Image (cartoon, rainbow over all chains, first blue to last red; front, side, top):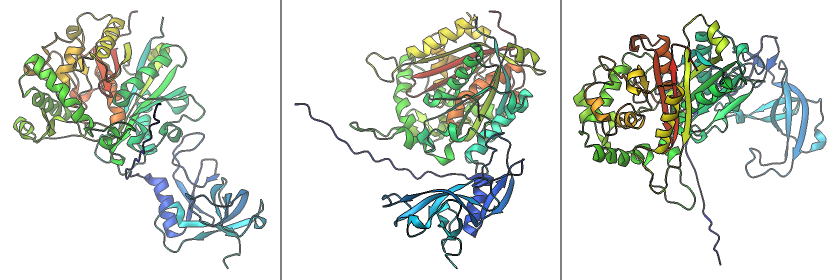
Length: 148
Length: 388
């Protein structure tokens, strides 16, 4: 009888990444506790920022501070989180349009249950005390006033 | 009949160990922008974009062509990715040309890139495979036995490889884009450099480079409308074979010979050495210059090393100058390296190669190979429009 072969395969390498002037500034801003978007020629603001305009491809350079408050545009509830999740407690995932930005970004919603979430509600950033220039420096978003 | 196709513009970044000032999108943008500028065209003039790079594992960005669409002005346009390992820059240019030759698009932007500073090619080329044993040889370990077989077949003198390496490094001094700029290098230093994979010495290997190279290709009307000289494509061919099968000639693979026969026939060239004015061959390890000169039919089998020895491939005084740009031995952003060969051939016949220009070059040959010497891409470009 034919034997089925089985083999483990582990690939591992410490890649590096050069972030460039726009993503680099965004990550540096997170380390400093501010969120940066970027202004397009039509005056709308993208957050997170991109180096090149997503429609016309022109280079974008006009970084502007946005948030930390914003509007929840859509959400879903995650319970229980999977092992790879950045959050170990049940949480929401939302599309958050930060004040001053015209596009939403995805991030975690740190509330106790889905009954605390609704489209259109105001949320605000919760920062980690120790920051290193990574998207996870933003621990997540909470209802406005929750951290007061 | 295929639409006549021309290289309208060439864009290169300076090749160097680390481009820490730009992201991947910023790197490809620089080359693409320079190619458009050279072609005196804008993003809106481009109908489609064709991108090539070495395997995704090199930088660990999967399907980077999608991530780079905005930087390359490809949003809303056809965007193709080509995969043929180290030959990919050449294959990508051939695929891009075919879109114009077939009458599908009028102007195509094509680009190859690599950011080796964010990756490790030897690691990526030696990944373990399930149910097999990796010898972890990297490219040098793979090719050195093949080179030894060539030396045994032809009785080539031992220092031919060093002569190629020294020549290409001298050529690189005349190309501002070339990575290695070794002003004070001597032939003796090449000979005395550490032996890595016998017979390949350290100085006979290519560097690891960051860089991108882009071409703008256009149809006959676009070529005619250009205010600058263009390079007309006289032939373009691709061939592949498995890297391991019984009876395979690894020194002079059939796919290489067949690809060469095809591209020279397309160009109507019968006297290969006599009719080609400049050759850009993919030479990541020095000995591949004489090996490919034979396989490509620029000389008889067994005579490649003699061309090197008599200086026939040197920009100064050679009748068949090879790699006047400095070649892969002087700059190796892997995914771009093949396209750089094709681009440099185009610059030569446009008379725009600067200090490494071959006087009066009318026809030039661009070449790339990849994998276990199993993927081939070649083109011939000329100052004049092809007659057929």
